[in-house]
Image 1 (cartoon, helix red, strand yellow):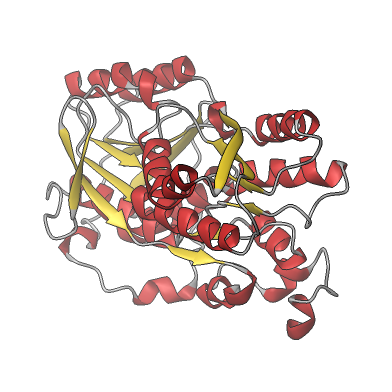
Image 2 (cartoon, helix red, strand yellow):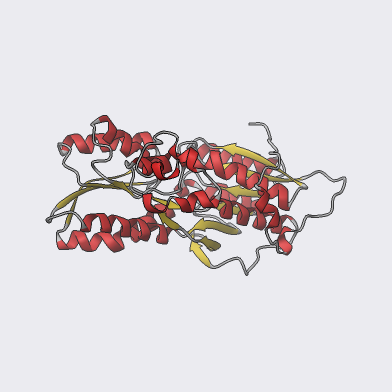
Length: 363
């Protein structure tokens, strides 16, 4: 894929961001631009292409206009991502910003970067088995807790014991998936132990593929004769696949789906229509900004700001310095939080169903 340098288009408010020393533009000169490679994992998790890529490239142009950004996508193939990392190194990469395709198979890419002394900024996904300079991630344990708490609230309103639920998780083995599960289980495991709920369908979906989530939900519904009280999942794309499976049986909005994450436009539209219960809002602008600031600091020779780091992640090779970012649960009752953030308008969210109960108040 040819190199792409994205034009500046960050919202005007970004210009007012108070920048530390890491964000000060370097002096302009006649030397070739620094090369930053933004390596995406797939196209099945839609936020990476639709939102993270433009946000990061725009912020980096703001903070480090002397740098050129090349974007490449592994399309869900860890071997392809390894090849892309090796190619980036051969092309003289100054920094790799890596969203791993599959954490379990990322050690080779990290090792190659380490041997070439190319710094690595891990973005969102973890990557194990090799060196990395820093990771920027929304606190996945807190994401899981908020998903689990919301699911527990819904279950509490359901009569009787043995409430049948289905759980659809993300990519098996990812740090995020494990943490989401741990957070959810703080609320769901006591309900299972008490007999209030019974998990009758459960799986992990490779690559967070919504088509896989839909197929599994269809199989579960068929096996249980539609007798499922609640689907609990882990991100918006999987949730959308489950809603599609329910819609195919005329059950969308009748069987709740909870555990969305990312506040994608499609998920917000489903919440407004009443077919998805919630999503976890992660201000992707904040994540892109922090990653761009850290990348800029590395490019300018200042390393990683200790003031920004607030934890570590063990990636089976080292304790990776980590910036954990906050999250917020979104339901139909507080969709205005996302609107007020400036990401989407009520018109966009309500476009599929302007007459819905939620959208009627904002027409």
